[in-house]
Image: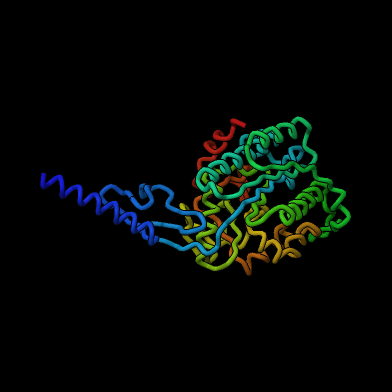
Amino acid sequence: MKEVKVKIKKNLFKRFFIKVCRLIGYEIIDQSNFYIPTLNKSMNENLNVLGKKSITLPLGETKITRKVSSLSIIFRSCTNVNMLTQNKKRLFDKEKSEYTFRSLNSIITSLKYAKETYPGIDLSLTVIDHNSKKNDVDKIKSQLKNSSFDYSFVHLNVNEFKDGIKKINAKNKPVTENQISNMSNIFKSFLTAKEKSKDLIYFVEDDYLHSKETFAEMISSYERIASQLNKELILCPIDYPYLYSKLDNTNIFLGSTKHWRGVDETLCTFLTSLNLLEKHWETFISMCKFEHYPFEKPLHKIYKSEYCLSPIPSLAVHFTNINSIYGLSPTLDWSKIWNENDNY
């Protein structure tokens, strides 16, 4: 009986100690079974509390001072144009619409996972489409309707922007009709973000496939790193191969489950905040009025004064031509992420 009473006393003390730790904001770890009783989680689970703290073992806790309240996805689609600036085939050699459908499916799947992981976050999805076939538009709308998220579909009117685009580019050549529609769609995306978004915005083209963890990782890593730096960020979820073609010094940050490194170049798929969009508005929209060389040159100018980070390994894959240095991210199973998103 004496031994039983001792065990009961120990268990009562343990439960009381756990409650006290929770109240004062401390976490305790049971190293014998890799369990954190104050969180009711094992050590290999997501230990972050959105808007409050980011926990990475063995570094401990980072207090969140930059809370994320919402994420708006703005998806630019055009199923009638295979490649904007070249005629090569994409990996898997499918119709352009197939990449659009799978890309949107991957985004919806990742958003659902983010909502399960962080129920308090406000998520929305907008598709801005230019000149896709009616059957393709119907399919996109069906995907949106079945997503269970707040969504909208916008038919791009290029004539709203055409007159504001210079017809001769930085190479002293005429700007193509496809590029004019692309620049118009980007401009419409920026305007939509200013009108509808409240916090984070993800601008994305329709040939990027995302892992399930993409948005949960970007949201929690944004909070963690922005709180550490006390600065707004730009996050690019793709580990582009061209980033390895030159020797650059960089900074490495620890996110939620990924390492993030500083980069000074991206394409036109990236996440940022409404704060930064408004701060650099004229530079952002300059990309929509004049075709620079490289096209993303205004973005690169912004990255000289703001932190732009890319994950290692990649969270998403750009499904372009296999030989493109702007395409397939290294050390990933491209077939796996492609096949995972055939259920649209």
